Image (cartoon, rainbow, N blue to C red; front, side, top):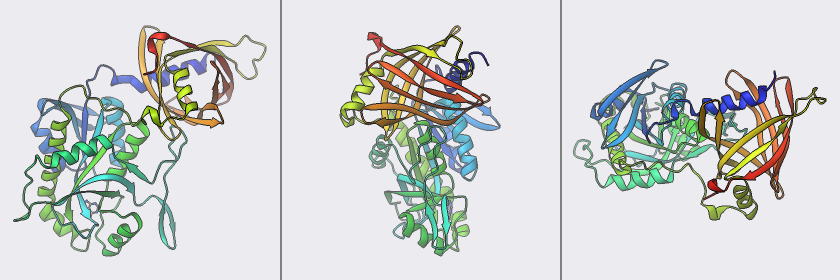
Length: 412
Ligand code: ADE
């Protein structure tokens, strides 16, 4: 029980970086089926591979850039499992999903390509007499509600659109594939129903339907990793979908992979690690700017108490915060340096910040720490001091201290 809070937080931070240290910026490429990824694996130079929990991750250089390619298997659960392993073990700079999809937009034909601007799970929400009313699940990491549509990375979208003119796609018969920017929806069903196509077009304005993209996008969203989905149409998601799939899926998968290869080429070989999805500094309110400046390049030096042990001296705690930046809405990225024993690691932590007027409060509600339990905290920051409450399992207490600026790590 003694020092359990400090140990829990240090373990959380160390787990979060684990094998991510010392790995160069890596573009991850995921596809559900062999036909969607094997050809990309075959192009890699300096190729190596690793099995993690039975999933094969093939690493190497594609057009000079470090990549990792994996086959997720079909469906949202398989996709989310592989995406989670990927983020934990390879810390990718960006994740690109490649493969085939059913057509929803009647203006598309087999072979055409959709570069997703956003993606949603079409089978997640309330099922009512009127059909499915989609809503976003709560992110278990910070308690914030996810959007119905996960937006794709602006930077990757721009690169993808610019890549198209550099590619000669395989023709479908005599027809060159059309490329559009659109909406890709995901669900745990292979759609071969005109009625479902009409519904997905009406309710979500979908252009294409597949079975993995939004699950991977959700993992990326919750972990702050930029994501992009590329899909090529293999069938019309109607009664003939299975037949069309047989005929068009291979060429569609090849054209999708071609676009991904070109995107990787355009990303370049340098350490162009994409910024996490932060807002521009000028998008901050004055209070948000003050908060960012107060905490970036600071050390929290203070104490914490344990309920029921009020007669004991509060114990010491110390956290070095390198940088704090707003990611989106109420989610802020805290880059925290942890020095513990002979380890010295810096970890990015997405945390929810709620505002009471001019006062920010970091809010953790029932956040599960692997093997350590579930923790809750409310910590407010004001004029170079912090104070709050914490609890985990059957213990908890208060924490408080001073925010000391360390000049060398000032906010940028
Ligand atoms: N992937 C390719 N075609 C599909 C379809 N019709 N439904 C769901 N996923 C698909």
